[in-house]
Length: 458
Image (tube, rainbow, N blue to C red; front, top):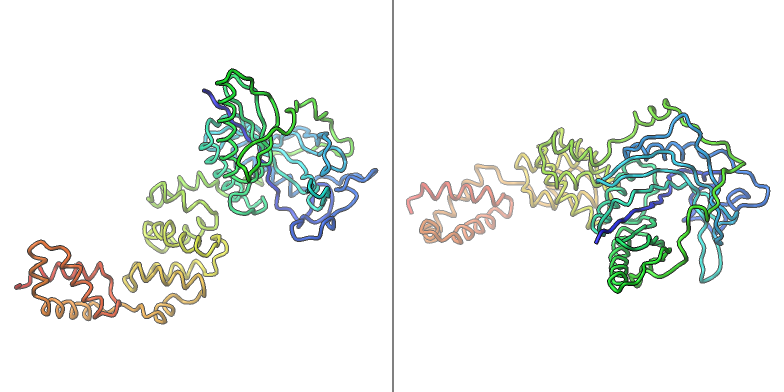
């Protein structure tokens, strides 16, 4: 049975003022209804200011990084989208015509990218509205219905959030947060829109339930109605919300108080010249330039700051060693401390110095990981940390002397190893590590032991 899924994704743009007025956008920390004015609360006679230029340029950059064609030298009208809801004081939402069209990401076509203003926050249980959020610029990304499974939908949303994060033009959200409407239809059924989706995981669960619900109806010979449904995250189900609107229901008209946008090619060229490399292209380049596996590169480009740190590190340290550390040990420390790469307290140069110590045999990889953890808690010179933690390795001559002593003192274990008992080698390594007070690399000890035992008289 054919499944068709499309998204309408909304992300707040990281601007200091709202889209059509000068009110600040820090609505999360402000007292309710404090960052408002007659414009963003829809007071009679209030006229909007021209659209926030930074918001318009952010939408252009997002369109470009998604491979879209920006609409240039053509009037782009700001429309009034009419609907009646308590969080919309004017009775309409201002939304632009497409700013960019015909892009793609992860094999999913992007139909359009446009701007609109965020509504307020309505609390239906208390019957109150906070208009601090009203008028904050949103970018809306509309896909074609190219997605065919909840798993593909989840992967697409992850890739999209990562791509938007690279631009630095959207507001940072908690991990996995996304505001999306999902359109889904099964072969032989009507198109259903699901609202109230606020996370990637929520989108996945909503789709799993909705596919099962629609399949059950169709198998019974019942009709899947065209409607809008709400996703109840706590129960992981969708419930009827209202009859699905048609475009005509919104009564779109150009806003008579606003001139249309006109984007020229030099503006697009300027934005394109300074925009970051998209993460999927950066991933391919890292694989090609540094000869690292695809799955490792995908982890590295998961955060722009992490990829930036890796590229700087790989210029001074073996790229394969650095990649292994970034994918495993560094990510483990970041996850444990609940830090983003851009929030790490140590410098890239301190990390480079630590990796050089590992690369040069000054500390073992295990000791290096412990130093990295301490580095994330109290950044300082890695060599000083190694001294404080007692992680200075013995000189080669000192280690060889201990190896010789242990071999001479344990002839039975040496004979056991020579007769094929591999566990005897582990015993000898343990003896050496104890005598070296853990200031030696077990791998180097094993190498020296095998080499020495091969020429011993036992």
